[in-house]
Image 1: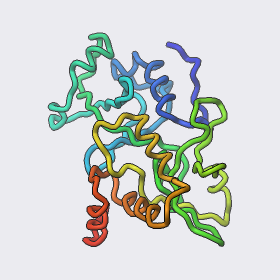
Image 2: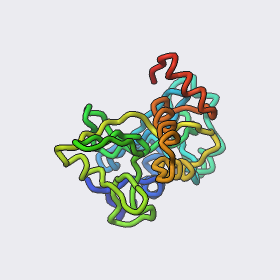
Image 3: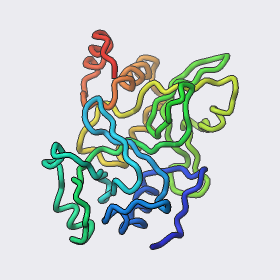
Length: 239
């Protein structure tokens, strides 16, 4: 096994890194082998409208930009993609679970918000201090892969580091939703990363920003029409 790719406490987990790691641990994923040498990574994915799923490393893999998660239960039998499994694992896979395609929805950063909830890439966080309050989506910078990436809120000509914000005693960060609204099952992983980055549109009007914040509260969601999200708010629906 190639062990040159290491995960440390400061490693930013991107979809590109996940794909590299899945290739590195191809054998373990192929045969469902769990051991202490597997990277300690948890990801989130869209299972259905209003429902996220979560998977530990070793229980998912990528084929190009498509995420597949190993699921148990007969209810997933119809979602199982035999062709993908045979192609990806060269007909040597010994796992008995079902390989189901889902939309990737960010990795666990291992940071927690003011309520003790884990923060994932793609989350919309409310940032409050003594002077102002704003809502921003969490991504990473720089966009290309290198050793100095950081989880942050990318703005017009600068960025705010998530860790620095959390370390500031005068700043309160609370997760209020995610960017996974107006979804399409045909979106690829990289398309969704672009969606995360576009949330912090510095040219947005106040109304456009507030509309995004509203939709962020009702995720994951495939509704395309803005009025449907307002309808959920009027009805007092909770996600």
